[in-house]
Picture 1 (tube, rainbow, N blue to C red):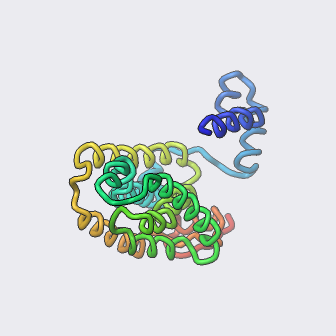
Picture 2: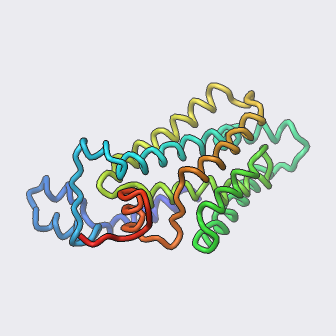
Picture 3: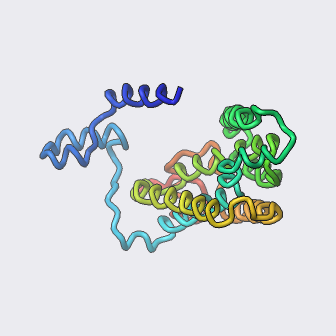
Length: 236
């Protein structure tokens, strides 16, 4: 079963356009420009300097994304999944409970995908953060409806296009480094009250720092961080 997605990825890669960077290295500037136009549109400027990162347009969405990735892992989801079998071994549960957790997570992500454009991203984050308490099927369901998939979506929406590649890598690195430290340092010995406190922090952070991106274009989201005022597009 694990080979199926790998084979699908291999097949779909045959239809992927060549990387503009690779085409430039090969001296094919014209094809590189066409690839950029296909991927990002014909009228965009994607040159970013290090000095640009000092502006709120860049550092605010990057910091928000990094903190989201950090807080997502601090809810304790990775230690719970890593030690899922020992947790169930200590409880009087069914042999297939771990498989049921996976099925429930899949179902909840599907539900979240159907709701995120109707009720909004922040509503799902509030619901998820207010319900994650302890390792149970019910709370796995709530996590996977909010702080699981929504934070990945928000990261892709709010990161500035000019720095999205590097910033995405930084955010993912912070996420899995946090997961590694939390899992290998504390294991199952972190009191679940700690995870509950983190969930409260998540709710406050969502209310204060995370913008609602439902029904907003990427241009509107970028302008929000550029102006700090509204989701509008200013003609230049």
